Amino acid sequence: MVGGCCERPNVRIIRVAEFEAGLVGLDRALNNVYISGLTNEEEIQRMLLKWIKEFGNYITLSRENDYRKALLREYREYLRTLKHEGKDDSDRSHKR
Image (tube, rainbow, N blue to C red; front, side):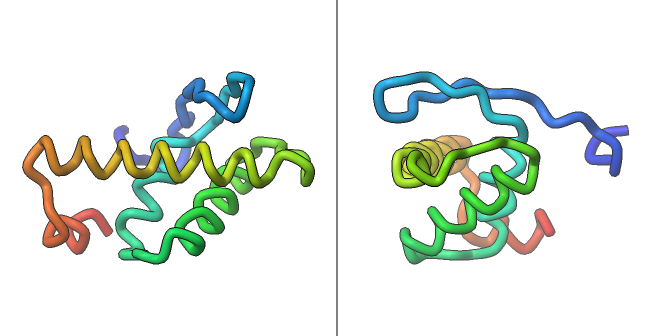
């Protein structure tokens, strides 16, 4: 069942500062923030980090800023992908 309660989140590897990190649930976190309608970058970073941690990823306090930057970069790419696919802000209400 797609989108079910027990769906296993996938793992994506992203660049964080000078290293690569595997993150569980990144795609879900990006979508969750997108449908929330947030536009303030600081708030987007905060929420992405919150979701990533909630999905079980461990991030040390000393690396949080690196992750915030990397997550914001991934979110911007996610938005570019949506725009390229022809989705716009009106699609947000349909994803909830």
